[in-house]
Image 1 (tube, rainbow over the protein chains, first blue to last red):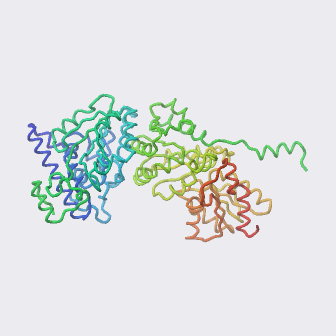
Image 2: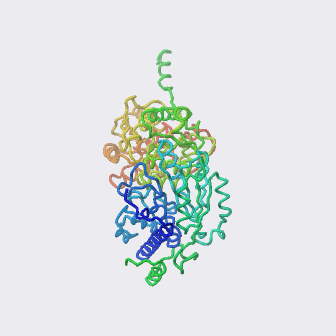
Image 3: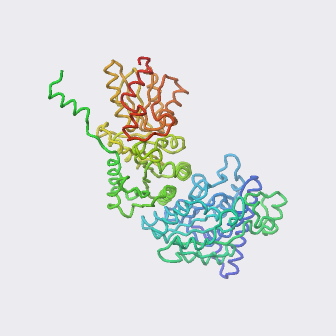
Length: 288
Length: 326
């Protein structure tokens, strides 16, 4: 398994700064990709970047980019498949495929489709895009680990609006019934879906109580605080015999002033000027 | 004239022993699980209709009941395959296919997940329960999906052979398992091969292409046609997808017409697939027997098959019609 630079850092403030920087690199990479493609889902790319950075760069996920199909790997499933630009950026930075390939995002015949394809992109576990597919697949993978007597774990990142799909709650019932403590659901709670704020569309609250009622050990965290995320993800399961739900409170469009908390940036795409401005705000250089 | 003794023999010949293919499927699945620790089964509360009680008691740790939740069931199957298991996702075909169609498309077909679907009690087996419980659309829906193999076995031997085959087939497969009583058609050593039609009877006047419960009826029709001097070829088209285009074209080239018969809608299924091949490569006179674009009225399965002419007589008459001898 490739060595993680993160592990060489001792002080929490160094670690936090390093992860923040990594997340901002993912943010600007995703925006550069959507800028080039003229398509994408920038808002959710930005809200999920810290979560992805902690999962892949702080030693949470036991994965091996050299051997992406390693049988004992932890599984990460991006259920909110539309945030593919942030996900691809993360996978490339972690070494699953060359970073140069990111610039082919959504080009004709590119391996990097608008939504991830496990048969084309190393490190992708499931083809997602239609919402409400990731959690059932994650539940199945967690059951497989148990049937095989293996101790790898399953992480799934969902959107919040996505939880309006009933299949999630079918899967939640299965996870509870089988006591899947090797499963962690992370909700990117950015409070905005495609058309409006979630609470104006179909109310999600009380979201934590709902997950609790479905038998999950629930923890709410600041989804932009890498150390808080890291501490939470390092202590799994939260409760023996129960699946975990981490509600990560995030800001859609996080880190870029003109995109933050704006419904229009769900699938907004930056102009050249906006990308330059975003780079300055994120403290990352654009790789045109 | 027959003697009383030969009458008894004749009666025995027209009343062969009948089988429920679900028994062959569940026996095969248990055998496979005993030999391969990756084999697991999922049901949607359908423990008795899938006949998996034996499996559940022999392999409790490899048996998952997700409750009444078909979308979730297909997704869970996908995850099990991701984790190195070999899941058989079993449920009433009407619910499994219609309710979980997006999961079948995305999680299985598009993803090429190694998951097998067993659609039970397909066609109009649930008779009086009505169109909500009929699965006459499943073949048309599923056969258009890239990467998904679709198989409609005819009898217990072929059901078991297709199950064994599915274990070695890498990729998603749908097997349509009937609960309608059918006679044994195939010899005990019959081997199923995906993408191959199986000729059950040679003949160069007309070709009868059928599958599932319609095979026995097609063979009976071939008998009655032979009595009129018409030699009917009977092809078992259990492999709907991929389909044996060579066998279809050979049948069209060697005979004067084609009759297809299926326990499902007459558009989009077996007849549709055969028509696509013929229209492009060898247009031939053809009749398509099935449920003609309607939801069935109330009635038992046998009544409905009779109602829609899905009988040996119906196939016989369609053959005469296509030959201009009606």
